[in-house]
Length: 70
Image 1 (spheres, rainbow, N blue to C red):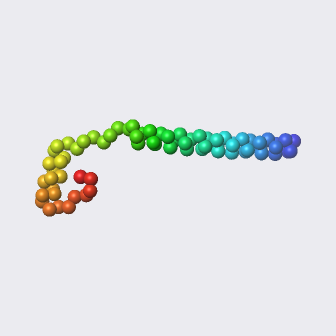
Image 2: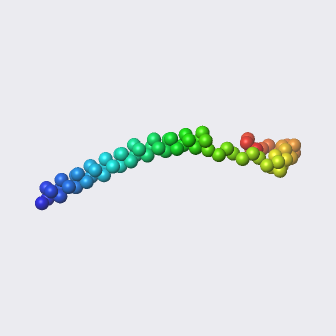
């Protein structure tokens, strides 16, 4: 009986490991494809509102350094 349980345990462990590896092998390429599709066809960033641009211009003209991207 012990031998049967030992064999069953080993088979279950091997099947679990194989399933885990299979999931990772399928999941990683799907994530990569999703990332590429979203990067290529995803929504573009919205243009900056005129009020925000005016505020940035005001700050820059006052001599206060701004972070890049503003």
